[in-house]
Image (cartoon, rainbow, N blue to C red; front, side, top):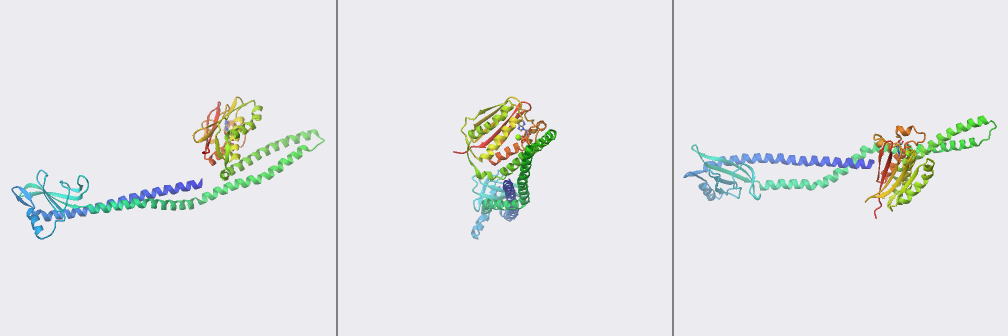
Length: 413
Ligand SMILES: Nc1ncnc2c1ncn2[C@@H]1O[C@H](COP(=O)(O)OP(=O)(O)O)[C@@H](O)[C@H]1O
Ligand SMILES: [Mg+2]
């Protein structure tokens, strides 16, 4: 249980760190890109201011032809993209490397996204009259590539980072959960030790009451009194014995050690055996037990605990039913062996349906009955099913009866 919790904590921690990491990367790349765009815009503004005086207007048409010729003469290549558009936003002149042939400001692309540039334009106004637009662009191809590579790199390191964080998280969770684990195992050991220690005095009392009841006395009244008291002691002792063995059994099942003692179990055989054990008790209460166990389903489990679980369900069915019948049915689904134990007894209230699986919980109705256990029977059923990765549930109507359903994973063939 603690191990699962530890892994869960580690995974949550890793997810949290990875999300933070990705947000951090995206955030810093975004801020960096924004800063770069701003400095490019300042550069573009300077270039526009520098180039603007070289625009000549001939026949109402703006041109940079002589500026380009001069640049060529001086062997100074045009590094930025310089474009002239007419009043209808149509490109009329284009110098420098390949750019995006469209009037726009900002980070823009050509149609097939092979060219990306930062672009800025301004109207060409001469003596109060507008003649068109001057646009300057610088390629952002290399910057885009750097950013893309950077993002790709952060994604590529993610699996390694995730692994590292999970391992670290698992270690930290282990440290944090250590006291919990220790307390839990201390508690389990205490229950087991106390159970063992109680066994001896219980047997001593058992033997002593037996001896005393065999004593032949001369006074019949004193003998009757003695028998009465001995009967009380012996009943109390029997309850204590059952309680101790239930506690010990529960401790054993929860210890998960039973996992290592798994064997193939032919469910029909096991169930028939349990049902046969309960027939005499049922008969004494005038109850019949119907058995439908034709399924040949096989599970992999620890026989003693599976036997105990089914036995506890039948014991309850008999105990909490005064008239009618008890039916036991074995069936299988694709992955489960399903055992249903139904009775026509007192039923379980809606509010009690979860609680009855808790230790020592007994419903009001059953508490008032003389016959009753300590309230550990269903906790054992639940623990057994958990140890087998199965489940237990109850369907019931107060006063009409109950059906307890347990599911064991089938042995895969
Ligand atoms: N078949 C049943 N019909 C009605 N109530 C039941 C049945 N089985 C269990 N219960 C309720 O669940 C409680 C817990 O059951 P269990 O753990 O076996 O303890 P116990 O039988 O010792 O009381 C019982 O006290 C009873 O209130
Ligand atoms: Mg019981």
